[in-house]
Image (cartoon, rainbow, N blue to C red):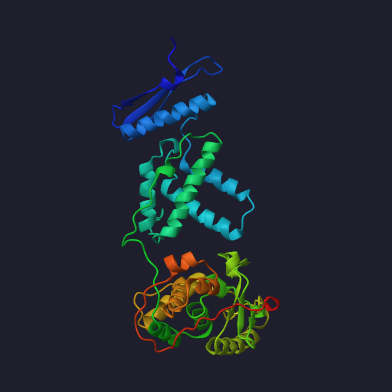
Length: 388
């Protein structure tokens, strides 16, 4: 009686070390049978490979050659994603995650990719990957790490769908434990925020106020336009943001589109900056880039996000704030103080254009210190429908 195909194959130790999973492949058009082999580091991995090879034979009657790399997987999935109708910001985030996967795992063969490889890659992301030129990447936060893992799973799942592999080892990977190596967000005390505003001037001071006191995302603050600001009514409407190419893009989410009431401090600051911007435009004349942005350089162009980050770091040094903060931590500061004032999560989520879960799990930080600036009052944006 012939041996069932599901029982074909064997696992044995390789002479040079490691293990080999081998299986007989049915005869091809020329009538020749062949034996496919896959290498593994452990016996358990080899047995898992053998099971996936058997499943592939049962399903398709053949096996891929095993030379396909994760880099090719990334390229295939990237092409597939680009063929879909997705928002530019979503596509940009997907490409960033695929770049990380390609840097960390691209050289590995897809058929030999193991759960251990995936786990080590995620741990490397958590502490900061090394780039090809030897420079260190910033550590990836836990929320982004979850998305990177999900993208890796989706890319390999796409390979399964088109028949290049039978098993998705990324689904068995685990998230690394949160530790001191993972950089966490923080918020400024009101005293620190006051010192930071006191040393800032011009466009940067406006950006700090919009994010640190009014809770705008850095991209929302940089993309704010004058037609969306009503200084007489003291209302600011968030209708979009700047993408990574400094082009206007839709809001991050539906909840991000909102209107915010401004206090007299922000209104006075914006009015003074508007006068200063008029003088800058008159001086720049024909080279002025008329995009109606609230916060601009001396030529009317958007504030570059990398320059903003570097300038903010320098200002933190002048204001004796250590460690320095990032632009996004200014938003954390505004939201944390709203929580410290006793406002509910749903009120703050509505005001900040996010979800209650994000308020409680990500944005809120424990604060200490005595304010010399005064409280950052919550400014609800529940306006009549005809005024939005």
